Image (cartoon, rainbow, N blue to C red; front, top):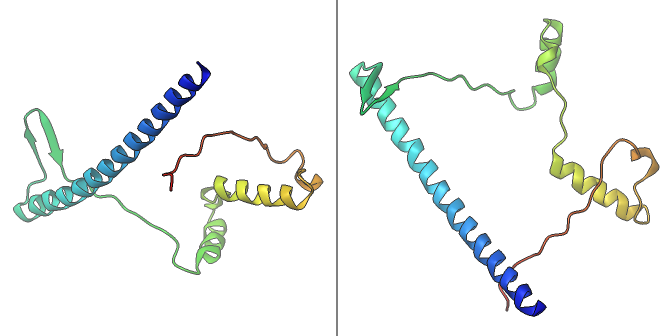
Amino acid sequence: MENNRLFELADELKALRERKDALEAELKQINRKIYFVDADLSDLMGTTGTQNFTRDGTMFFLTTKVHASARAGMKEALFDVLRANGYGDLITETINAGSLSSFVKEQIAENEDALPGWLDGLVNVSDTVNVGVRKAR
């Protein structure tokens, strides 16, 4: 009886992961299409001088977004200039969660399966147990 439930859950997990993969692939394609259709529409609106229009109850309008990033090798200089000009509050230090998890895992492995004392109280560590799925050979 328990084996039946085990196999039912395994089959359901496999089917759900396959469906998720298919949906993610479809979403990638849709996002790619959106990118190109948006570019074509905005180009056409620009060349025809159309700032906005309404179609089937939906308004379409041109917007401009500014994207900025620090030039390669200039991050610290940018930070210094921002601080000097009173904009230091824009600067945030972050640690990628995946990188931190990998680092902590390494530290635990190197410290006889225990969190090193110098990290104690500074990081939350928890384990999750999942079922790995891959195609059998």
